[in-house]
Length: 116
Image (cartoon, rainbow, N blue to C red):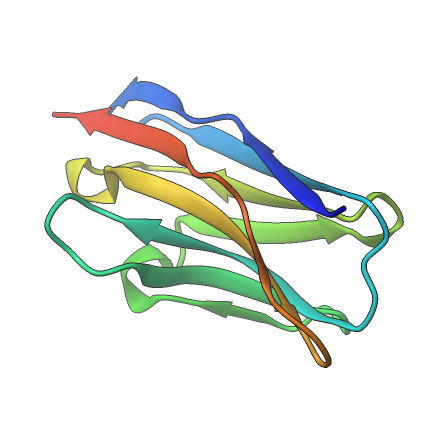
């Protein structure tokens, strides 16, 4: 059974940094990409950043230049380094695995709160 375990969320002040981690346990085949989404209260879930199996990255415009996604393929772990955090980054952050074949996987979410 596959599980995605996220860690690294918390409460920080504006301008500070956090690093999120998502470790996937169990065997996962046909991974196309891994990534992070977030959902703020009253808003839809939105893409933050993704990284493909080939290492190509994609970022939401709102986080470009501040967030960096990386991946350890051997450990099936994806990271999100978040710098210069803003109050509008406050949300629950979800880890996501997209597969070429089969169902996608989602983590349970980790809260990130940025105070002004």
